Each structure stands twice: as structure tokens, then as C-alpha cells.
Image (cartoon, rainbow over all chains, first blue to last red):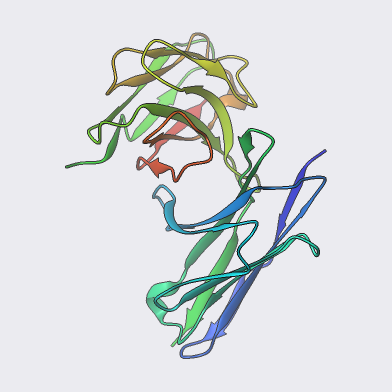
Length: 110
Length: 114
């Protein structure tokens, strides 16, 4: 069955450093992949979308890569700030459905 | 422009009680969705409505019913609540009738079934 894996452990990163989150998928060939941010007690908020024919996408301090050979997407936040602390969800789309990963909790330490 | 709104924010039910979760969007989106989110699990799709007048089952539809009242509103009903339905419920919408689009989420309804 299709499976999405994100870092199950929380990620602690020092302020100013680059945070890198991983999303791996199996038994799945997504046409594209989205990343969402979710703060405690709130609904997810869309951040970035990357298509299968794109290697990399950037938006301000955010960068997403998509490697269909490795079946993996990496999400980077450069010059991280405490305000970036949240849970980040990856959501590949394929086979007429979108599947959300469980998310990775990111803590940016001041 | 409020986006996607959900009511109530919190609810406690006893096993066997019924209730309806309300969702409305003011973005003129065609499609609307209901998800549930449980600890240690990703968001799981319960039902969706590609357009006004249509509804389809998602991954976990058992125990739920939905109504697309008009283009703005999409409600989720629990006819006989069970403890397994304790969860956080999110409504979402997209511009077109496609799950693959960017989804706009509401703030969620936290439901506890005793």
C-alpha cells in the first residue's frame, strides 16, 4: 500500500541554521507534492508545491526538492527563526488522491 | 474575507449522541472536504464534494454522512457517535474540483466522545 514517511522525531535546530525535513514515499508515483505548515490548534496552511518534472522550488527562505528516483522530497528553511517552529506536513498527490504525511515537528532554538 | 470557518470549535458528546459539524467558505471555491486528524496519524479524508450537489467517500467514511447545502456550506454529521470518532475534524476547500489543488483549511473542530 502507499506509504508516506516523515521524520517521526521532533527536529531541534539552532536559530540561524538551515533546517532540513525529509519526506519519503513508497508504492506511489506522485505527480506533485505539497508542503504545509501546521501550528498547534490550527489548520494546515499551504507553503509550496513542486511538480514531478521540477527538481527544486524556492519561496523566500523556503526551498523544496523532489527526487522521483529516490522517491523523496526535502524541505529546507534557511536562516531559521523561532517563528518557524511548527509541524510541517508533506502531501504527495497521485492516483487521484492526496495523502498527508504525519508531519515533522520542528523546534527552532533561540 | 474569513476563508474557511468551522463550528463548533469544541464539542463533547456521549456515545450514541448525534451532531452536525458545520463548515462554510467565502472564497467561491467549488470543492470542499472533510478530514480527521488523530495523534500519530496523518490527515485522513472522510468525504468530499467536488461541486455543489455531489459528494463522494474518502478513505474513512464509515459512521459519517455529509450534505453539500449550497456552494458555500458543507456539513458533516455523526448519527450515533462512538469513542473512536474522538478526533480533530478539519474542513478544507479548493478552487476547482480536484483533490490535487492547494487546500485551504479551517481552524478545526475538536470532538471528544465519551
